[in-house]
Image 1 (spheres, rainbow, N blue to C red):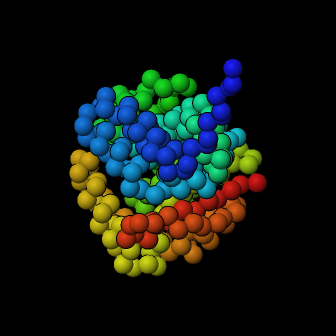
Image 2 (cartoon, rainbow, N blue to C red):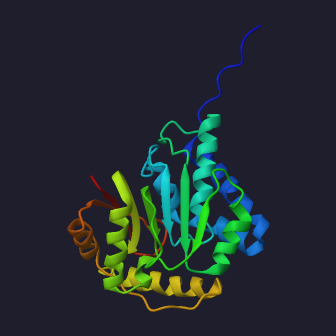
Length: 250
């Protein structure tokens, strides 16, 4: 009897379609808003697929701190990716992602923390969600810190203080993935700020003042704190001026 031929690796597009469906599915448990927000964020924001397709997470970075985690979408993404990789449903061009040993999500907004707990609080290993201000929350020792589009909510001095604490929490070989708006791109930065305020209102949160920096200023700050930095444009398909800073610590 002939054996079935081995299945072909998934294409990146098909793999991402499955990731999109599976990572957003748990949010049905928290209601229509949570589910539609998860689907929209994964489907339209280029950063999540960019992190995976470019291999920026790393298979060995198993202790993750997600600052400004919202409803915990990054945790759901990581668990989905690892399960797909374990099943062999994985594009040949994608690097493996870690099997989490610890995920800590820090979020200021109680509603988002409640949505996270309801949707993915049952995952294993159990994610920890902390309702706290990123300026004062304790950061556990970790291998990867993710800060996407939230650092501009605090003033310049507080931004530096958060990044110092991030540097101190990262273990040797650790990485910070920081997405920011490049204030030197005036039109794109203005559009991103307007959209950010609109989404904040829709999510039922108070709109706070924001503080921006140019890409050069962000890079200089991180290098002064001891990071080696590279930048990747991360606003493809959008009118924004978003840049992902990949900051590594020796």
